[in-house]
Image (cartoon, rainbow over all chains, first blue to last red; front, top):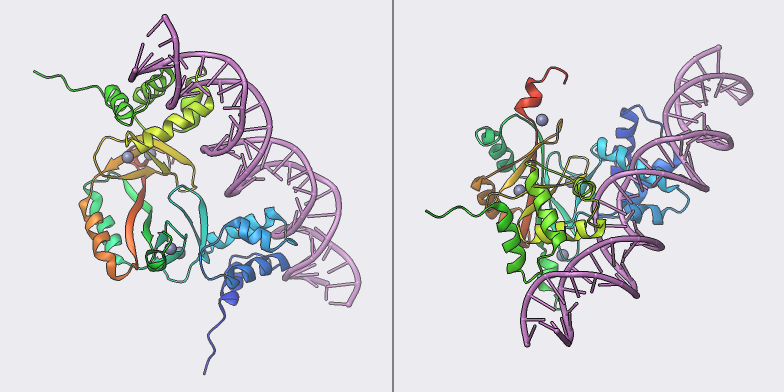
Length: 144
Length: 144
DNA sequence: TTTTAATTGATACTTACTATCAATACAACG
DNA sequence: CGTTGTATTGATAGTAAGTATCAATTAAAA
Ligand SMILES: [Zn+2]
Ligand SMILES: [Zn+2]
Ligand SMILES: [Zn+2]
Ligand SMILES: [Zn+2]
């Protein structure tokens, strides 16, 4: 019986695969991300790791975004958020009340985009989509 | 024969409808936006209108976004851009090379979103979608 | 014309980063 | 192992995109 690799190792391996050094600081940032289960801000991580310089936190987050270990997205007002990336290709739903971020897969969106060659001139090189919601918890909570 | 109202008037009327005062500064910001035909940054407008305070430029842009006169969106790297809103409900294509912004209408996306109730828990209250492209001009230009 | 609340703008502050660069440490090599 | 060299770090300062403050001004209703 093979044990599934821990997410931590996945992230470290992704950095190694990119030819980067595995430093104590990078391990700490990865560990801090794994400790959370929802979305977070760069500042969340920086405050959780006083021993790691802010610049290093931001640099590491950028590396992890490039390595597809985490996603960077934005609240409706533009506030940047990060979220662990668990599924191959996906989009995000963001609760406008509590900020909870969920991933969802939907190939329909991709198919629609491919069919938009009539409406969109040029070559499509990427897209971003975020769905803003009020999550079940917030809908059911009294004060809202 | 009725003349179509100028876009300028539309914008001013939208502000009036919101119960706001029509000031010289707001007229200047609206006029500066009309003078451009593509996307622009807040800083573009502020630099074009040295006689209008920066805070007022930002305040007015926010009012115009709320009044649906302009749209606020973001380049892939997150840089915020503004774009005149000409079509009722729409999404945006952004050229990653030259930054040109176009609006496009596509009801398929909206239909897809409504059908995502299975994948997305909670009540959908909004969404954002941007398609990143290389526009015809940039594809045809030699140095790219 | 008077009045008054909305608006303005100079300034300072905030957030989310990025650039610099000397000091440090990973990891490859012998 | 120890040496080495480059990647990485972090303190500091700077940038981009705003927001908060508040006294002075002004649109527009009365
Ligand atoms: Zn994600
Ligand atoms: Zn919620
Ligand atoms: Zn638009
Ligand atoms: Zn282009």
